[in-house]
Amino acid sequence: METPRLGRPGWRDPRLLAGLLLVLLSVAGIVALVQSLDSSDGYWAAEQDLVPGEVVEADQLTVVQARLGDAADDYLPASEPFPDSSSVVGTVRQGELLPAGAVAGADPESRQPVSLTVDDPLPEGTGAGARVDVWIAVRDGSQDYAEPELVAPSAELAEVAEAEGSFGASGGVTVQVLVGPEQLPQVLDAKGNGARISVVPSLVGR
Image (cartoon, rainbow, N blue to C red; front, side, top):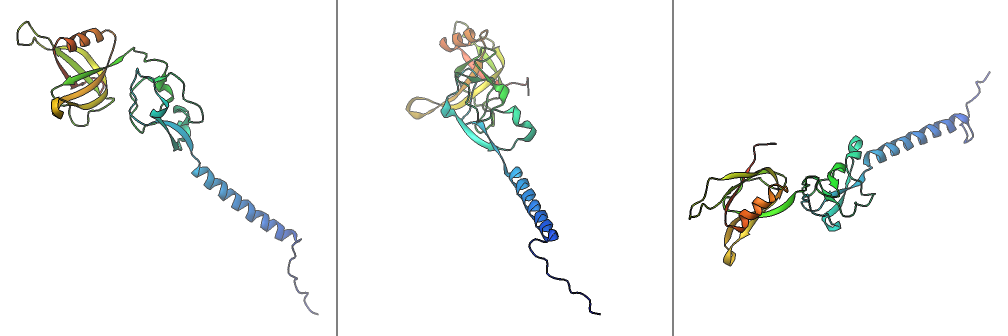
């Protein structure tokens, strides 16, 4: 008696259809996994250093694609427009994402940037966002200066640039320091009366 020969399964064979379905589901799962790993969202980032007290303009911002995962809510998404007439609470350096809590209508501490020219260079690496102490020595009625006084401790540094003297010669260093309303009059008076102003890195908040 001859053994019956197995025929080749046709397209309507349930086993073949089930196998094809498993293959398709596996491929779809892999594609979804790859897309989820490659997906990223746009976030607002600083195109240049942003300092408190100044209104942030559109050309100071850029959009950066990033995958932040659980930290996504901590930064401002580019899917929403940047709030008009807003500034940042703390210094945001070029290339950094804007934290959601860093944007405000005005500086909560009412600080204002003041430009100061100092003779002594700051230590290498001291830039925007660093904390500095502002010391002022007023003239004592002659050519000498009185003992320096700490006027603005742990003030935030907004900008550092080389000062240009006459004929392009170096004239020291120009810094912008964020000064509160209590220290502002004394700092401005020192600038206008030829006092000696020194800016040194602060040990507080390091």
